Length: 421
Image 1 (cartoon, rainbow, N blue to C red):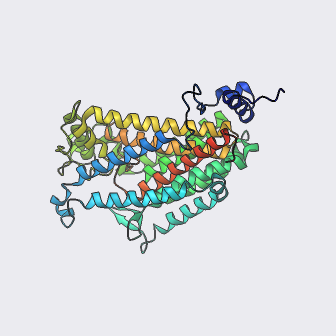
Image 2: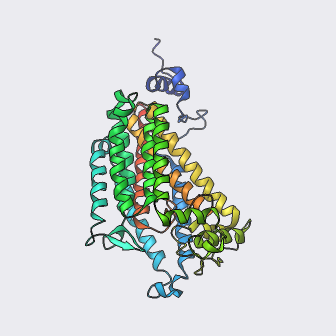
C-alpha cells in the first residue's frame, strides 16, 4: 500500500465486493452509482427511493380525484340521500391523513423489530378476524360481515391479515431455512395457518381477500426456496380447493356463469350487471375519454363505482390513455418493490427481502385482479384497487406496507454506503 487515498469509484467497487460476496456477485446486485460520473457532476446520496414515493403520491392523488368524481352524484340515490356531495371525498381525505401518519410512524421502525414481532402481528390479525364475526362487534354490509366500527373509520381486519401473512411467512422461511427441501416439514405449519385464516375469511365471506392472502403466502414460500415440484403440487391443491368452493356454492357458480356470458339476458340485469356497465364505461371512454367528471355510468348505472369499479370510471373519463398510465404505474411500482427485495437478499437480509417481495405480490396481485375484473378478464370479486379506491382500512394498510418497503430500501442503501441497517 502506498498510502494514497482511494478514488470514490474504487471505494464503491470495494463495498460491492464486500457485501455481495465478490466481484461477480456484486455485478448482479442492482445498485446505483451514488458517486456520479465525474467530480465535476457530484451526485447527492439520497436516503430513500424518491421515485417510488412520487409514484405512490401520484396514484393517491389521482385516486382522491376519481373517488370524488365517481361519488359526487351518489346523494341523488335514495340510499345515500342523507350524504352531501363531498361526503366520500372528505372521508377519503381523512383516511389518507390517518394513513400518512401511520406510514410516517412505520417507516421509523427498524426491519429487525418487524421481524421480531411478525408472529404477533399475525396473531393479532387472526384475533380481529374472530372479533369481526361477533354480532355485537362486527358490522355487516350487503350480507357480508367484514368491518369493525372505530368511530373515525370502519376497520377491515382482512387488510391487516394481508400484512400479517407477509410478515409471518417471511419470518417463518428465515427460521425454517434448513427444512426448505423437506416439503412437508416446511409447508405444513404454513398450510395450517393459511387454512385457519381461510376459514375465518370465508365465514365473512371474503373469498377475494383469501385469494390474495393465499397468493402472498405461496409466493413467499416459493421465493424462499421451497422445493419447486412440491410447490407446484401445493398450488394445484389450492386451485382445486377454490374450484370446489365455487362448485358447492350456487351463488358463486352463478357469478362464474355470468362472467363467462355477461350479455346473456339471464345475467345482464343480475350477477353481470356491474360487469356489463363497466364494459360500457370503457367503451365510451375510447382513447382520450369523455373528460374528467363526464362519466354517465357513475350516475347510478354502475353501483358504488368509487370502490371496486373505480378503474371503469377512469376509463370512461380519461380513456385508454388514463387507464394505460394507471396500469404502467402499478407495473413500475410492483417491479420496483421486487427490485428492493432482491437487493435486500443480495445483502444477506433474507427476511427483509422476502417481506418486500411478499408486499409486491400483494400490491401487484390485487391491482391485477381488480383491473381484470373491471375489464371482464376475471370473475367479479370484492377487491379494491390499491391506493386508489375508496376504503379507509385498505388505504391505511397499503401505506403502512409501502412504508415498510421504504424502510427496507433505506437500510439497503445505508449498508451499501458502509453504514449499519
